[in-house]
Image (cartoon, rainbow, N blue to C red; front, side):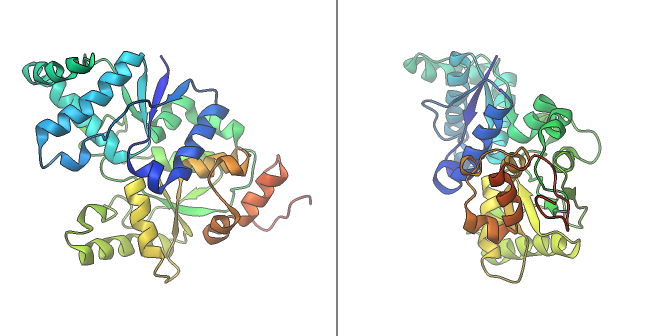
Length: 301
């Protein structure tokens, strides 16, 4: 069974490079995937406001994937959490499922509970595998130090989100190590990015975000690596204020650079590369460099 890619609402409009890089990486690994057709919002904005509408919204997407005979591959951690919570509710309460399906049948859809939902980071770790990533990582990312942002919706609650990690999560750190980067341990590693409070208590929201980025900087990191558009945009909104805080970058873009994929397919332009401190890496990828360049080395030497 192949995958149908769920981009959600935020990524196409505000972070299209995340989608571009994800599709480029999946193509490079030969993953059977198609773009989502007819999807609606995952329902997350209504999860705590109108539970029935939220569940119907999620279930419709799940039913579309089932009709296509494909599992769902998600890039947004909020969307991922929404789908997993919806599946848990609909699979435990069959009467609720029947009520939802009564509405879905008007479109010729039905949710049976057989579709699997996987986040892109989990898929890269367990579906593609670290060995395959290491084998394809040919371009220079050695010496780049960063802090990862695990996020909340992918990890909690563990009995619903099913990340297959025991103890302290390490899959994101391992994904960075697989492309030659150094993933830092920092004091606020598993803290919330602050985005859920934005607009409710914006002062506290920004305080949480800045504290997390400062912890990464104090640990020696120049980047914060994300896998969620909400976390990414929260960080981006704060670093625009200056103060030399680590800049956010989505993991599939870094993976694509490490694999030597054409830069134009990854949504990273020269200006963004310069801001991220990745100009050397982008230049080497553009030149088609096939061997890692370590800190202090120069291409061609």
